[in-house]
Image 1: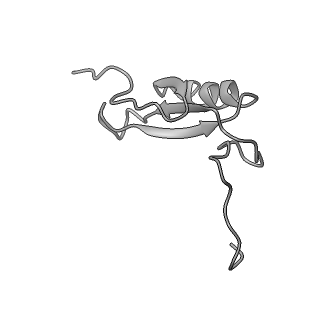
Image 2: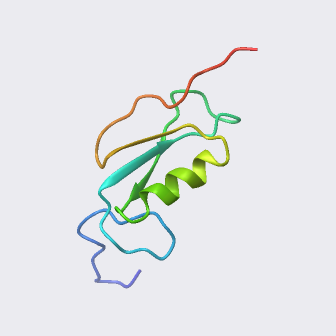
Length: 81
């Protein structure tokens, strides 16, 4: 960060190298290490929302896509063995 510079005025897409304004939230969790109530969020622009969601789904992470700023209390189904 450069001293005296300001960051972006709006959230930016989480895709590496993308500087577009985010419009969607990609809510997810890693079920191997987090409980159902642990929700992580990536911001996504219109172009990268599908890429980010599919990246997570391909790793068997539960995913919910919403409008940016919407809150999600849990992602996926808790299973018992």
